[in-house]
Image (cartoon, rainbow, N blue to C red; front, side, top):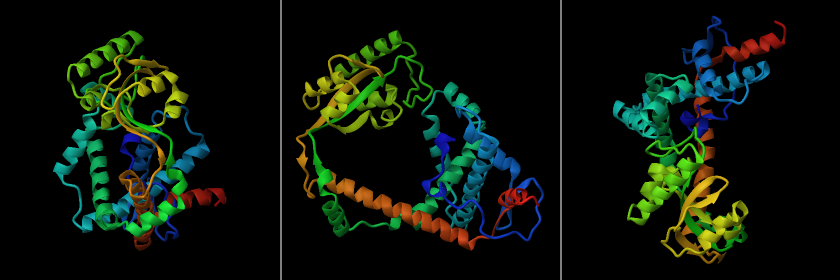
Length: 342
């Protein structure tokens, strides 16, 4: 389930429990966590949802390996959910409603129902998954994220070790609205709006440009109508790009940006192989060696250090939590037994 992936700490944990089971379990039980069973039906449902949309079905060997990975995630889900419950951090109905509405707002009603069908989910399944995500996020935030600090000394040290990487070419901070000439299965604009033909795309781009020229906010228009799934949610923001980078993608983009003044929007949509772009220049940076005093350098370095600490602490926290749990991975045991001919 691409859009419902759990927090990153659950992605790379051990697949087997690390201890052998003294308790017999029927074939419909694949694992037991502190006495709570995980069933084969639950694992199969997660597996089917995970491979939906895959270009080709997995081989039998891949199925076995993938199910072990998914079961490892499910085991850790259960451990962390129990910890969150004991700490009184289970997501409330109101918190789940907010997450549900945020997710649903990415689609029209028809698209939403189609997405549920594609992922083999009911609305109740989706709410349960969102409750699980929110609960784990609350636990992780309380135990890890809220406690991470980044010192000025750490920022300075990282800058000195990577100073050459901050000698930058001239950069242009741009935003764009992209309209593609084909039907897009992954549209993420607020209106669920999608041009499906070259003619529709050209007409839509021209209409949106007229609205922007008439005073409509660029970022709002991007969030509502851009067909770029990555940038539409953030108002079309593409960050800083060099003219060389833009030219490598399409020289027409570089030329359009080069001719803009700060705050200006292209007077005509720019057509590339991706479709029609409406571009706005937000800032221009002269480039050169950036000092540690530059706020953007500070922000970037702080985020890098924070992310490193966050990843390490999440992994350590998860492994420590697993060490304290009673885990029996029957699926792992059965695979080993089968390999040994037992």
